[in-house]
Length: 103
Image 1 (cartoon, rainbow, N blue to C red):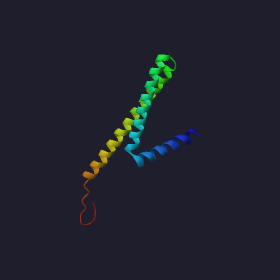
Image 2: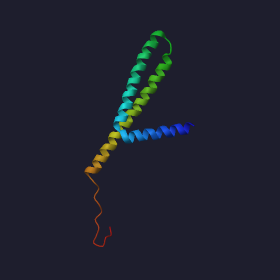
Image 3: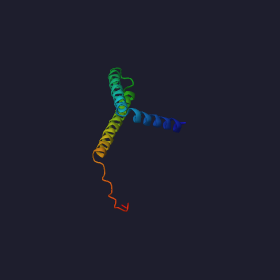
Image 4: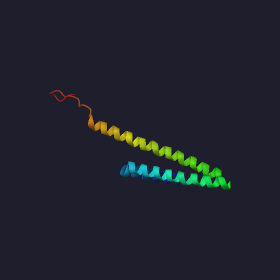
């Protein structure tokens, strides 16, 4: 069951990345930042009431890890785009063929 869920999530994520690209990654990053801000606010309230501080702190740390992951993926998109752009600008020279058609 877990394999089915993770495979489906992976396929959906790959489809979204393929069809939406960087806007998809940006939206995920913005959502994570918004979630972190909300969690930090909740952490501040929890500190004053001294309930659930550890749970909220762990959640904030986890969300920060997810944000780091998203920023890494955003960087990967940029690097891939630069590679494709460079490849289009500087195509590899084709091997010269002699008259007989051999390389």
